[in-house]
Image (cartoon, rainbow, N blue to C red; front, side, top):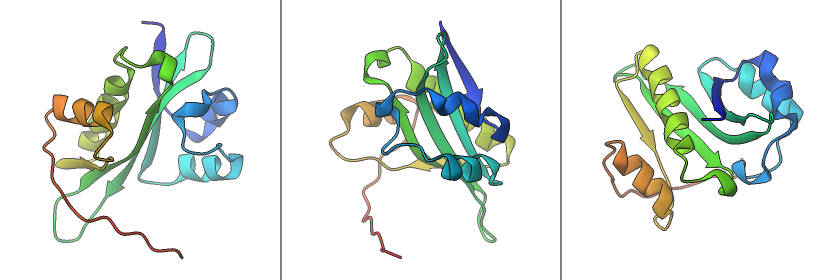
Length: 140
């Protein structure tokens, strides 16, 4: 396959100079990227095509608790529309899960929209169980 899956480190930030616009929700801001890549307990995994363009990304955060085992929160995953159905999302997800295990996580969790059939199939296909819950946000 012509795609490299890479765990991004602060020194890799320049690789995101060229990325498919559809893999992120908004444009990547350099200061935010630098802070994210340097933050302990955070990981961005990227799929990089042979031409150097980043065509997929997934992000995870270690969720440490004082009373329960650690878990991995899978925060975001996106693959360029032109490269979907090639197994890239699964490879990104697998790399995040491996990182979670390496860091002592016993579970991983992710949320997606009910109408996101592709994401739901990906997660279910890798053994995740679906649950229904209420989601709230606060403006800070």
